[in-house]
Image (cartoon, rainbow, N blue to C red):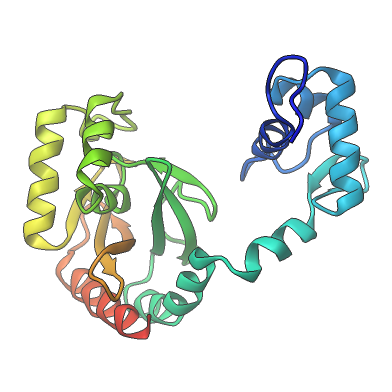
Length: 246
């Protein structure tokens, strides 16, 4: 891809445009996209127009810009993450039917927990997780499991960086976090009370592929004072079933 006068490639600029969309920011103007992507107005309007023509972005009724169905179509065709979600979904539905509240599936992506699916009961406890949303690895039960089983260089990089606190219970001390990760590998699960929301507890277990590598974290979110034994048993059972299905 040709570089711009500033030195960034067209690919860089396209990615920055697409990254301005978030789970809560789904419609923007071209000017807003340009500002958030750090692009001159003329460049932003041109790139947005080309992406609209290609179907990767689309205009809604208010003349705002949103992510286009064509982008979803292309991403769905051969995505390993979406195949993982499809395999896991029936077993997640079984957990949800028996445990209630929230059932989630997350993968490790760019040193964060990226959530592929969430099933929730309408009156369930508060949960900030969103499908296609991200959370810091140190702040959620899914993130802790993913970090515990990540490559050592990933763990070292995360532990040497800023550990973001979401509540007073979130682990932000590197030494404490390293000990916790070791305990997770020994126990095969984590219980994280109040790490994201004071009123809730996250529980998570790893999901392995055929080679034994951890490819996902399967989790539930319960009220803070709820018992955890039966939910953990359901998680472990579902994780084994997903591994066999994979």
